[in-house]
Amino acid sequence: MPTERFQFTGEGGHQLAAALDTPDGPAQAYGLFAHCFTCGKDVLAAKRIATALAAKGIAILRFDFTGLGSSEGDFANSTFSSNVADLVRAADHLRETRGAPAILIGHSLGGAAILAAAGRIPDAKAVVTIAAPSDPVHVTHLFRDRIEDIRKHGKVEVQLAGRPFHIKREFLDDIAEHSLMSHVAKLHKALLIMHSPTDDTVGIDNATNIFVAAKHPKSFVSLAGSDHLLSGKRDAAYVAGVIAAWAERYIEAVAAQPAAAASEAPRNVVVRETRNSKFQQIVTSGPHEMVADEPVAVGGQDSGPGPYDFVLAGLGACTSMTMRMYADRKSLPVERITVTLKHSKIHAEDCAECETREGMLDQIDRVISIEGALDADQRKRLMEIADKCPVHRTLTSEIRIVTKAAD
Image (cartoon, rainbow, N blue to C red; front, side, top):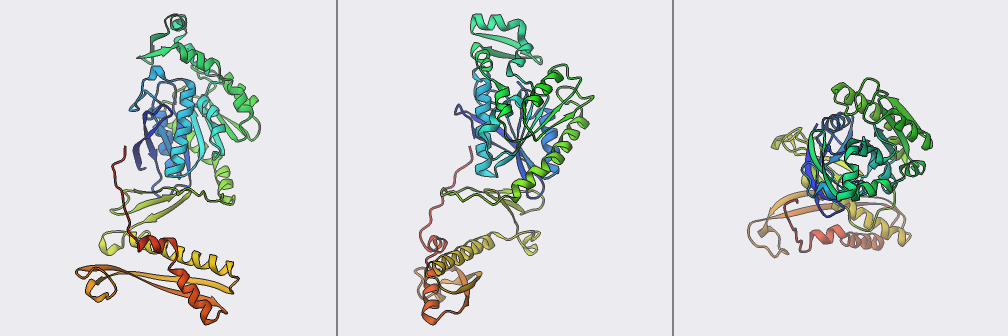
């Protein structure tokens, strides 16, 4: 499965390293994965689950929390609250560049963070916790013999999974303030709780607490035989399979809902290679995905429209929409508008009205068919309106394209 790596800005202004695991074709849904305490986006469980879900059509964004992995910032300055805020930022980035996350998945303390963040990610319809504590304070058992030192000195180095980390008093104060069960009780999203009955890091009673506090729809799946970190490859594959099957009904329910009114703010169009062939691309605009390609004759697979086809489609759609708006406003009996377009290169000397006199020019031929009982004056006016569509004006005016490298 293709994996795209990039950065986005976290709550504290730091650049956070992220990886988006995508299906070979268009994604059926997008999800967000939160890793365990002091782990990272590339921990085996996160990578395996994300890859397996991508194979089932669900694109998963995973990232390193502040100060971990390849992300900027100091881990000592991070808190449970900052992790929650970074999750909300990650969801915002996913929504703006690909599509809104329909599924939220959290492992261990990441599961607790997902539960706390879910209320601030309205697009998400399904939440999954894996070996999650029912109280963030649970994580302090990993360094319980140093808690008094942390409170006394304000900052102490502790050993976690064989690595040194600095823990501050602010971290202890922050997790003590969180009432996770209140978030669970107000979740208003489908919840799947996955936990091993033999987990010796986060006991099964934590799953019980979360399940009791949650309202339906809620489900529990036992991960019998697995350890806390899901170190067995088969365990991660099983988790991904269950998540995909369980979430399918909620993804379909989201897809069946009418689309929300379009925002007045322009949304990003993102184009990325699939690497399935030389030219194939996935084009994403908000919740919509399309495939772009080139014809076989020039080395492509013709699996989707070419770049100029998209330009013509934009002009054609805008033309028809603009004419329809005018016809409806004037109560004209227009039954259907069809716009046929073709792009070609012509010699500048063949264009009498063009300013350019040498070389080749781009020409777009646009043929408009208007069905309906209209008189000659009405048809003439509609043809004049066609030239007033915003895309037409953009293509025939000075265009400034600003290109810069991604952060």
